[in-house]
Length: 117
Image 1 (cartoon, rainbow, N blue to C red):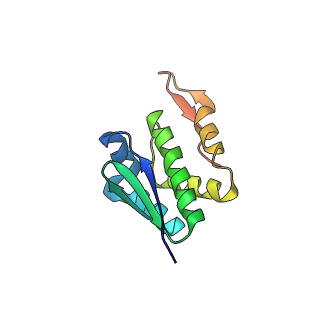
Image 2 (cartoon, rainbow, N blue to C red; image 1 turned 30 degrees about the horizontal axis):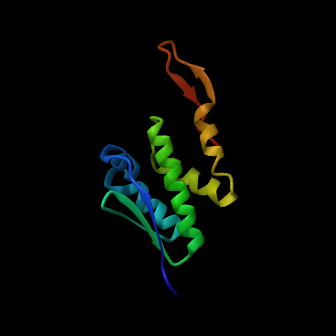
Image 3 (cartoon, one colour; image 1 turned 90 degrees about the horizontal axis):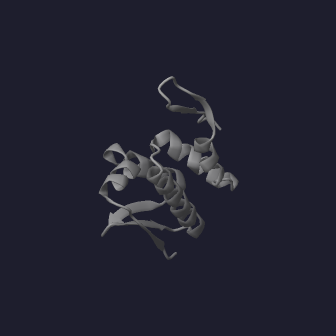
């Protein structure tokens, strides 16, 4: 069976480091959960796999995580798991609302957000 290959443009070294995580743990988890291969080639994230739907889902999740990073959110393995779960349900766009809803504000003005689904 032919492999499907897609690229997601990267936005800077710092964002890529945060996206991939320490020791590439975030992308390794995404690879394991969706049965795809993710690599960085020439500043572009390349997603490869046998199943085109899995490649498309991985690409959508990576783009959503990059958007969260650009807004200053932190990406970790728990967020990757939530993103995969939401994507499988077809509700990946609800990931944005998790970070917009502020539950409370600390006395220093920092927002407290609910991150459970």
